[in-house]
Structure formats: C-alpha cells, structure tokens
Length: 238
Image (cartoon, rainbow, N blue to C red; front, side):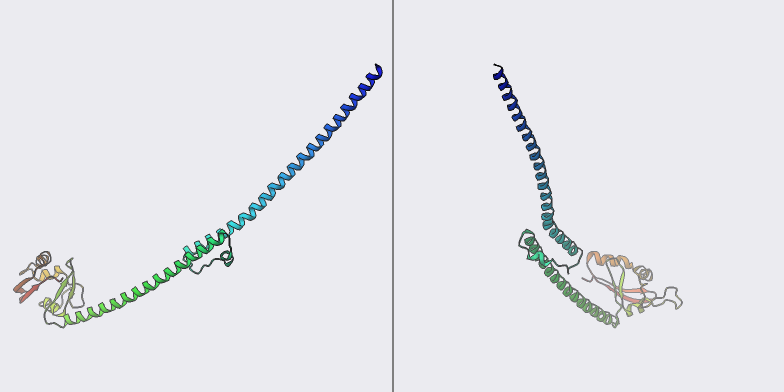
C-alpha cells in the first residue's frame, strides 16, 4: 500500500502543480488582456475625439463663415461675398451656402430696385416742389400787382399772405415814427394788429371765425378805417 500511497501523492501533487501553472498562465493572460483592452479603449477614445474635432471643423467653420457674412450684410456691407469653396461644396454646408447666396442676390436686387424707386420719387418731388414754388411766386406776383387789398390767413388765424395794396391800406394814417414799422416784407402783420385798426367799426376776428365755421362769405361796406372808408369782402378758400 505504501507504494500506492506514494504514487497517489505524487499524482495529486503533480495535478495541483499543473493546475497552479495553468492558473498562473490564466492570470497573466487576463492581465495582458485587461491592459490590451484598456489601451485599445483609450486609442478608440482618442481616435473618436480627433475625428469629432476634424468633423466639427468641417461643419462649424463654414457655418461660422456664413454667420460672419450675414452679420456683415446686416451691418450694411452689401459687397460681402461667400467663399467660392463653400459654394462649390456638394455636402449640406454647400447647399446651405448656395441657398444663402441666392437669397443674398435677391436681396441686393430688391434693394437696388428700391434705391432706384427712391431716387425717382425724390426727383419727382424736387421737380414738383420747383413747380409749386414757381407757381407760388407767380401767384404772389399776380396778387401784388392787384389794386385790391388781399389778406390770407391759415386755420389758426395767422396771416400767411398780404399784398402791397393791403399793406398800403392798413398802413394808412400810421405815423412815420411808429415803433412797429409795417411794410410788405414784415412778418408783424397779425389778426390782433388788424383788429386794433378796425376796433371802431368791425369785429374782425369774429368775422373770420364766422366765415370759417359757416363756410360763407361776408361783405362789409362803408367801414371807417382810421378815417378812410373801405369795403371788406371775406370768403373761405377751399
């Protein structure tokens, strides 16, 4: 039996030694695999980061350029252009750049049309203003050439026109040394001043209000104006 026991012990020791050797190899293999896995994982992360940076540059840089161009246009720089490389690109950014470029071209065309229309309107306004000023000058010359005194007031009862005949009539009897010189070029003719001259014979301001409110004419005859007899005809101008 001792021989058998010895052989059994050797067999068991040999088996345990073999198992221990296998376990050591497994541990070494596991450690190597773990290290390799960590290295591969880190390499994948680094590669992913590098790819993301490059890819984001491909997307973000064109968008940044389009944003910069849009801001320049919004600031009034109509000479801004989009990079030809962006327009030639066949990806999504290229289509976006071409769409933006088309919109910008339409905008410039519309602005040119508006500028042309504005210049045309300004030209017409200038021409019409010149015509009106010429007509006004002719009208004033015609009114000043009349022997009949004419006074025009606005809705606020401000004297806006008085011809030479009216000036001469209203100035009748004023002393040469008057502290308020009155002549055709003076802006000092007012309704109150004229009323003061009519104070004994006519309520001039009330007559004007009646003409305006009732839209009717008033004829006043044989008015005593500072010792001079005159006839006053008042009518609304429509």
